[in-house]
Structure formats: structure tokens, C-alpha cells
Length: 315
Image 1 (spheres, rainbow, N blue to C red):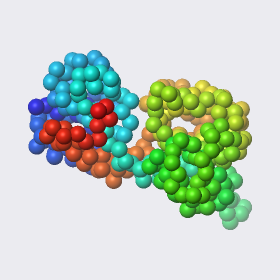
Image 2: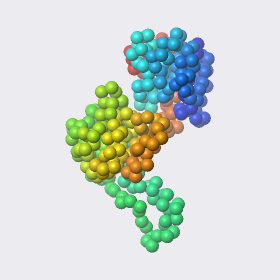
Image 3: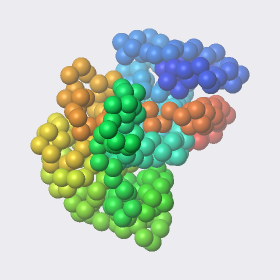
Image 4: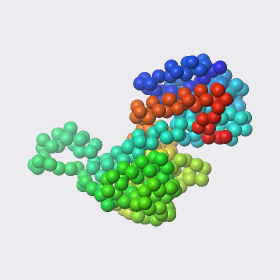
């Protein structure tokens, strides 16, 4: 039995171990797999473990021995779910592994927007404080979060964690799409959320129905002082509309951990905009979150090989 790990480097750049998988079968490991080589590398696989390598209809149909596709992520839109189901191949994911890490990163982006820590640190390192006529200064105005309104799109586990952090900062929480946990959190229609919120944080999965749903129509509703934060999926935003909105000052700024194409293409107009900060899709990447992901993936594969179902998304 062959277990093919198509792109293990991001999950394990050297601080984790795949050793436990060796007890389950022959492990064929790749740091990365070009799309052009996926079919050949997976042809003899009984189990495919993938993070971001697309497992398409062609890959699935070429793998005659395939019994399981394990995604080392919560999102599974890179898998042709319909083909896998048609062939009776379960697809399993790793839910909940990054709840705290992703919410922490989303709030770190929010704090960078309000406190400009990175900009001020860079200013001090550049010698600006030596030359300052005053004992303190800030490169940009600092904003207090108390009584500001955060709008959360997708009040699942990560969204609720984000709302909990915001509540601790004294913020008012409104949300769309989800079930509230605290009475003080207020559900509103999506268009109202875009109109009211000082900060909008996106925490919903990508589906066929919501692809590119954050578009000109919704962005035009935002306050010119408001900010958009996305640590979910880049494809949820119509990027060309966001570029125009940022350039025109329709909203104050955006903080993104995800883009519609990753890595981004050279010349992506969002990169370099003065009111848009971008991190390289690493909200999930804490050691602790990756350790949980590795463990749950091992449990998913072990269960499947023993004829049991665990975290199957296409049952």
C-alpha cells in the first residue's frame, strides 16, 4: 500500500515528523508537486495526502488503487469531490485545527490597522526617533477599539473566536451567517453589516454560491473609515472591485492573508497599495496548529484503512 504526500513542506518545514505514517504503509513524500506531475506521482497511490495540490478528475481516475484522499486543511475545494464520491473514495479534511491561530492572526491584522506597530518599528529602526524633536510620535493616527463595531461574516468556530476577542476589547459585534453564542452579538443582513461595521472580518468557507460575493455592490456600502479583513479564502472577494474601492477611498483599507491566486501573479494590483496590507496565507501556520493537523490527518488515514469514517466530507 502506497501513501503519497504531494506537498508536505508547508505543513512540515522541518519542525514536525511524518514518521508515524511509515507504520501504515510505504510513504512516498514530496515537498511540492507541480500540477503537470500530479497524475504520475499519484498513479499508484492507495492514499493521497494533499495540502494545496489539486486532486482533479484526471488524477483520481488515473489512480486505480486509490482508497482515500486526505486534505491537510479544512477547505477541500481543491478536490474533485463529485468524482471521488462517484468512485466511492472518501475525502477527509481536518476541521477546527486552526481556530485559535487564524482568529489570532485576523486580530493581529486588525491591530496593525489601528496601532501601526510594524510601521512605527520600521520608523525607529530607520533612525526617525533619534531625529525626533519630541519624546514620542506615531507615523499614523492610533485608534481605540472600544465601542467600535466589528462585522463578522461567518460565525462558525473561527468567527466566534474572533468575536470573543473583539468582545474582550470592548467592541460591538454584529454578524451575518451563523449562530450567535453571546446575547450581545447581533445578527444583521449582509448589506446592513457592510453599512454599519467599522471593521469587517471574513470567516466563511468558499462555495460555488459565494464565490466573489464581496463585490462593488457591497464594498460601496462601507464607511470611508472602515476596513476589510480576510483570513478565509481570497476567491470570496472580487479583487478588481476591491482595488478600485481602495484607490477611490470608498473604504479606508484592507488587511488580507489570502488572495484569489496563490502565490500571486506578478503585478497583482493589490500588492503595493498604501492602504492594503497583505500576509502570505500564514494565519494557520503556527506550530501548534500544524501539530494538530498532522495528528488528525494520521487519525483520518488510520481510521479509513481500518474501514471506519472520520471527518469525511463527501459521504
